[in-house]
Image (cartoon, rainbow, N blue to C red):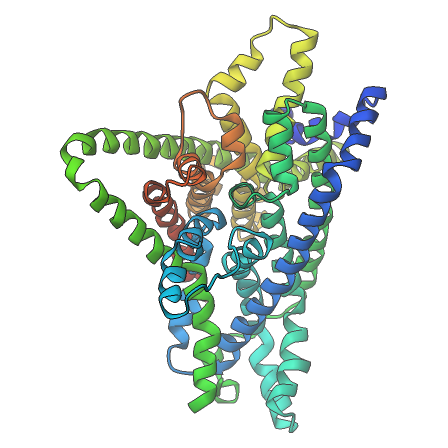
Length: 542
């Protein structure tokens, strides 16, 4: 048990390192903080606040509209839209940004075509704050859609039918029954989308926005000011902690929902049919987010990749082998980082989740272990740039105290540092999956095994492992996909001459080589489709 507590403490250490930056508050630090408040901090706060407010409103509107449509009404194509509305979850926002920039910029396909019809026409610049808001809304709305859909599937149809029998018009039923019922789920989903927005680096850096995450990156690597980076990271950490508290409150409210079965259990719970213009409206509500959040970006990336292939066709025999070799190296780096991090995260999650069931420990020791475990579980809500700073900042202090130590080289020049960051960031994903699996194993089985003289290790190996293999497989896959898509932590902590698909796609897009960035970007999307399809399959079995 002490070893498990030590592991949890190590995972929580980067967060403690960020908070510890304020311990050494001297005159120089106060001067740096004052300069930030007078220069960059107002811009970071304003940009991040606009993003937060607009994205929250947008994902709530889109998620609520799509969830109500597919959950409470019957129309042709509803079953297709039920799972297709989850597809934008596979599209990282920074990948969508690369696609839309090529399509909507002044020299892009859309504006070039429109200028032939309307000479002198110029559309608003996509690489702007409104453009970022647009991208985040249509790549993150599945968070609100999925949670709201589950809430409405549990009770919405029955209550809507009761309201109809009482003579309530359709619009009033949606406004007074469906939306209040889905409100806790919508708020929880909006909090998740908002945390993803604040954690993003790719879109902000590519669009030239001054957000907290881009500010942390610039402060550390561009201005070489670790104090400024730590202070910005601590402010962002406080905001994320507040959002995490709001999300958990929303999840607690969701637990009071009661499950009633599926729509087809009784004739009185049939969905309200839609025909004619109402069916067309339902198609528009459901198809537009899929088109803007997934289909159009994928088509643009495929066009970019094909155009790049045609452009290099004359040199194909000279360059194909070299390019293929480099691409294979990027894929291998992404795969090995993802696989190693996933295995380590699942191992840590099994240990931490097992502690939650260890009722034989003394109460104080059990409370301390659970407290450290919960601290470690906060990692997923923390941006990768904050975690990277939380790792690098203590190393800088240690370097000052002991200049000849080799820990800094171990973290920054090998894969250890980046794997540690992945473990801190994504162990919470594995913990959630494993804890869900443990919730289906009665505690009486453990008590019976202990009565028969089985040790804790034997119980975990023989009793728990066969019952948890589905949860472990899900956790492995989810962590693997998240690692492949992770950008800011990878940029800050990757070893020398070691690039992943996410880093290469970002670097190529930053250099305006969008055609070359299309292939790694599409590979990331293809990997992201795996958990989306698994979630869809799991929901169809309910």
